[in-house]
Image (cartoon, rainbow, N blue to C red):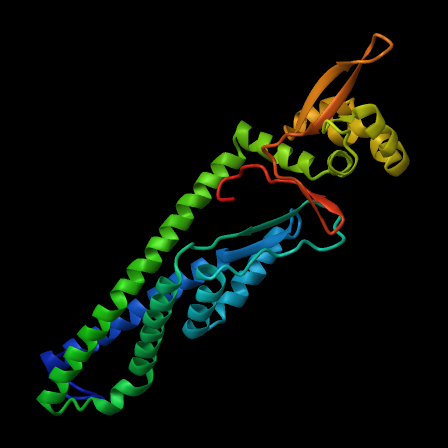
Length: 300
């Protein structure tokens, strides 16, 4: 085909064909960078119930798919390199609410460097798409040589960004695989159960009672706490086995692994159960409610 041309195309020479090949090569490189950003941003935030999670994922993927390279680059910096923060669950849900996300912990210097380098890549891509052709005069050898140098420099500038984003994607995929394996393991099931128990209504109330009304020695009589629970949460207490899988408050406290529990003698010769929050857990009351620690899930 060398030496042939159609109206509107330059006369074909090996040098001109090389320019055309490098244009295509660079365009594919920019598309690869855009594709990697879409992968990362689709996974950056995901939330919902078991029923809505897949629908939410598809909606997010469709939204991300429509965004430009520049938009994706900016959101990546704002949501992934600079932590966008936790999102609150809806006030009223009738199912378990899940929220997943990832951030890349780094320093401000790297964030600024990445943002500048990513902007340069976006500008280079736009320059190639919108401004390259008017500057290239195929009839002049000097213009063609300059075009080849420009395209090679552009590729050299974009390759490190492609490799960096590919590394982020690889790390994300490895983390997702490890997380999935953990969730399906016996220990994963135990940690999710632990997380649920620690944030359950009865356990939070028991912790609140232990924080607000302990004895002088720091312990709380479990029977006294149970009396308060019968006044405040009678249904939860009555249906404890069905809701929590434990028949007694003592077994419920033991299952959370948050509390120290002891039996002490009473003046009448019997024993009673006392409990306190284990000192290694920094439970505290915020906004009038007890805040419990999360179980140690991967990536948390």
